Length: 184
Length: 434
Image 1 (cartoon, rainbow over the protein chains, first blue to last red):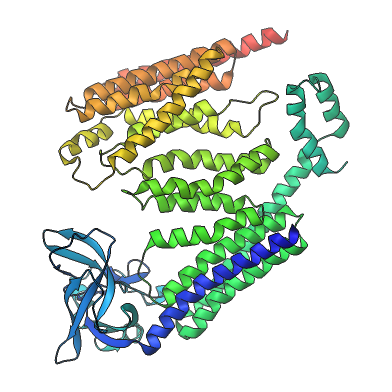
Image 2 (image 1 turned 45 degrees about the horizontal axis):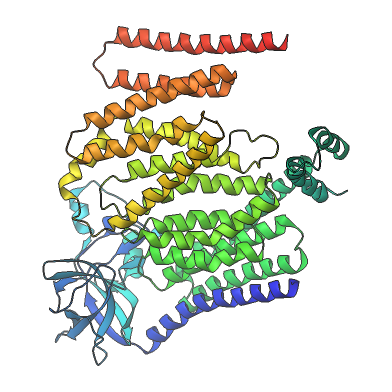
């Protein structure tokens, strides 16, 4: 009985490590061998964005018309189709209910639908940052405006539709480097 | 005889008295012979609390030490630390199960530490790889990966964490709130086993206190809310069900785990009715009248939920009526007030009928409890009834246009009433002693 209990505990421990480990392995494999895309995100207000423990990432065009012929439910998984422009930035060009061919797409969720538009739940909607890098609130209107970072984009890696955020860039610099620069 | 055996004996005595193997006198003699088992129980409880607290503090300290330099640690290092934390917690729990199986403090402490480590590991991996925020998926994964610990380690603190965590998950489910109940039921065998093995034990009471506090909350947050503000009849009915299931100061032969259910119900019914005796909650129900059915809800689930609760209330009320125990029925009938009040507010009859119904019920409840307390010479009950009356009267005075003088006089009258009733009971009790 005691041995059976220990055996079951050992099995549980393996499942726990398996779940945590698979989270790591899947992302590491994607980060190492996935296709890289640069996606522009909406301007970031540093004070507002870091109010929680993370920066909320919203993309240009994360609300778009969906392919007619299928009902979409909130929470449903769909596929966001990507195309790249001449500057090397990727854009969302549509969504599909079926997994497309090729590697220019990623899995996303449906937040809500209204009329013929669908709002996407991105698999890279936040960037965690330590408290020491957060930008404090400031009542000075001019300084607030300066904290609005216009040039912001994310680097993602996609493998078989699974997307992982590799880095957030603010004014062309990795986010932490940019934030460290603000402190000096 | 060891403390463990004495506790077992004390748990068994009520059943022996009930079945006639032992009479009350014999039970009292046994208790005198074997002395207090509670000292051991208290020491064990203290050990469990200290052990768990220690484990949680050490774990949190380690996480904080790493968190201080978290940004500087390379991604692979962060992933290794996240997994390492889990492995250390597993090793501790495994060792406790192997070498300290008899020690409840070790089992409770290490299993709670492991449960927290599972949550911390998933969170740290989430931060390392910038995972999107999905509390619903996170809570479910965390709780399902942890609930087997309750059974493997025979530990109740992880069971309480599970009840809280899975109810938080339930809050994200509507309109699919029906998934909550089968998942939450995973903990039911542990509650049942504790109530059977240690009907009056500290951990059983702690478990049932937690369950009693969580159940009304769960019954409301999982509603699909297709009918807006449906929580009002649902919560009040859930408290009434708890009240009727429980027992006030269980008599010899009844388990102490029934007490928390009664106490939470006894406090919950007047509190929720007090809130509903104001106009704004009903305005909320009426305001969304035109928005009904616009949400993609599951009305059938809400109606089934409240029907099951009300069926339980009816069965328990009938049981009490057959046993001629009428005292608690005034609490049990609360759905007969809140459900029609809700339907009236929803039916476009304005908020006043609902408000009047709730005020009349609360007044009757307070008065009935006070009189019942006076009759039974139960000071706690009488004061509870007076408190309900005083709260109701004060609330109505504050939201009315009465002047300061009238309010002042009303408060004095209430205060004098409190004092007079208490003096009366104390004198009667003294006369009884003499």
